[in-house]
Length: 253
Image 1 (tube, rainbow, N blue to C red):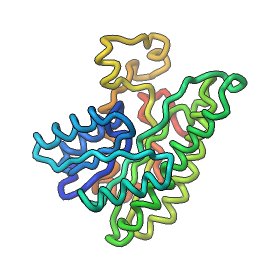
Image 2 (cartoon, helix red, strand yellow):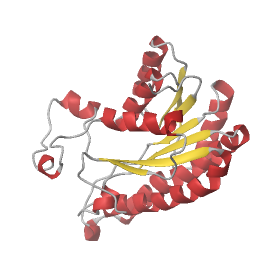
Image 3 (tube, rainbow, N blue to C red):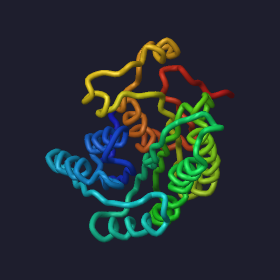
Image 4 (cartoon, helix red, strand yellow):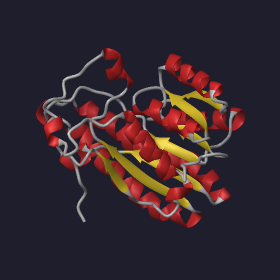
């Protein structure tokens, strides 16, 4: 048994960096053609496109500001015109900001997190779910975070936005389910990405003792879970919130 995405087209937002790069590569290795969204990192997006072409996959890069509905709709039109509307959408992009205690956090950071977490998912659903409904098939994978469970200090903007994201996803599960569209969330822990690998090191001794598996996860751990959840092997899985944290965070029943 293998995870196969052959014959599928995927869109990965934030596909040019961090976790997104691993998801793009993994989907391509599973046989999918991939539309790679980027905001400003065109160079890395185009580099990924070339990687996928070398693998024999169809790929293209598309720019958009995922916090603006008109920009997402423009991206959708470009994808439809130049590529193919996706069967799979991964909502991975998020705005980065400096984490501070709530009393010191700039109010604009709460808006940026809400826009890039909650509203991104709303805009993507409005843009791409109609096509999925028409073909009676679709997959949404939404990247959440272990922070939405932990609610640790200094991450109030991020945590509150991801909590709101959970509510949107649960409603989409019920609204899109009758059309054979699944919607699931992946909650990464603090994972190692290409950025840290390139830096040649990182300080994580404070974090690892909190992880039962006693190691950091990697971007590939998240990509592998995403590939499973959007594949037909998970065709009856919808509404799941899956922590990929090495046991550091566990959801309640």
